[in-house]
Length: 253
Image (cartoon, rainbow, N blue to C red; front, side, top):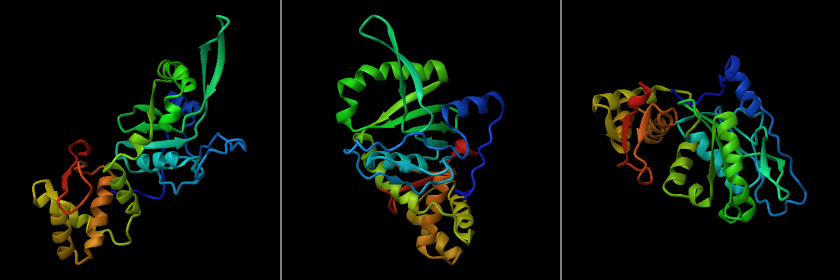
């Protein structure tokens, strides 16, 4: 089970209608447009998306947003996500004791494997702690929760740069493509089964490379792809290495 080149996102009925309202559908177009006045934006570009990303293309408008793409792409708990989805309409109290309608577009909408939905904003802590955002976030969170059943998450640089999460995510992402010869993955599975479902990266790679007559790098890539697919769980308390524990994911069985 590896990351493939084609997505199979095809919800039906009321579920499909709800997802489309949020902007979560195959081939979704990002809704934000670049504004010339946003000169503080750094490193805008296009992310090399994976099948989990349903957009027709996957832009980002900051380095933090690109890291959001990366973490969502390698998280085995995430089924699908879209970037720069449909805006949320919400209401806030105005100074004249009335209400004013506002619009908010998060960086991502993500669907978990347990069918929970999340709106995710990657935001520098400077902006996350600014009065303008603090005064609005409660209303945004409430509107998402009660109108759409969506939880709002705010990821700052403290979350996105956290180690070893970031280094491990980059390692897994480099090995996302399916190999021409999948025999090393079959061998890694059999080897893990022979060890009772629990082993280490080093042990698996050494034994699988001998049995499948492949390079250690190929066996390592197989372990990473099985982790991406959620078939195995890798201990995440330290940067991935030969002593990292690998076990079958019982929830995936």
